Length: 236
Length: 209
Image (cartoon, rainbow over the protein chains, first blue to last red):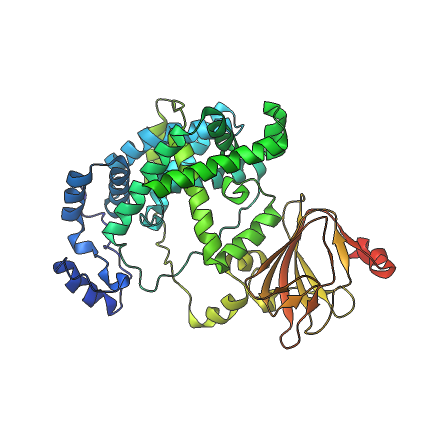
């Protein structure tokens, strides 16, 4: 790790919340505290990462840790691991959206470069790494294939920018893993349609032309598929 | 879902982005659609990258100047006022706040400003003085109307700040701005409106509505 290059850890908390949160970070069982204050700060991070990977060893949490290393340490080895896993998937995703192999390759590189540059904007309490990279790839696809801008919703301000609560992060990352499994278990036909809808550049009408299914069937299958996913998530 | 999958025309994307900036419930729904997108990506069968692609990307990163750290909550007090009416995605299109809008009269006191987007659909800001009505009209396609300030009523419902109205071909309505504050809306259409009265119909081509 190159400590000289390390950015100052989360420079933007100047708020008095910091004091209280740091105190809480030192006594982890202070439970009756409002969630905002119960957040954990940077100085205990690295040890905690390690502990968490030991306990949970889930793939999603590992990606989160890699992104953090990219963000905090500009760690090229961590980036290489992310690249090896996600770049070929982004490329495949873009090709299924109608991009040529060379365009998809170029865009996948752009997407991964964006991952590097915007790593500090990734919030593991709100999305899995795959979801975050999906949104970057989708926006890149719109730029490349349509030469349009894509307006994004305003990012919510969270007051002082705290490190997200680790249990929230873990919860969300586990949910994401569950969702991936649930998607895998959908009946073939439903899964195909959901995937087609996301590969994009295909409206429901175009899917109808490709598959020869009536539009109503497609809409209800997609609805049914999303319904099943929701159900799978609720069951736990 | 279509927004999450990136399939809407730019004009509709802008209205959706604006709405999501104002509506927590829809923000949560978008997050869940994005999560499905993430799962779809994860399940993609990998397409091998060319051998030198990682090295090429790393080389690019080393050359690139360090990105300035963007502060998430940069809302200064001066901007706070503007933000109340125009959320960020809309501000980007207008090039500023309410006072940066180049309004054009649309007749009857109503003013509009068309925002630059791709041609499949149009999006415009509408300024309807308090208490005034927009001539009654139907729709040839879908019309999304996001209320930013004030409120309007039509035959069916009332729409206040943050609300979005979705009108389809089946709807004919006469929106009336409520008394009090002037009503400002962002409206996207993918086909011209169908005005019931003759005069607005004649004026339509000139106002591109």
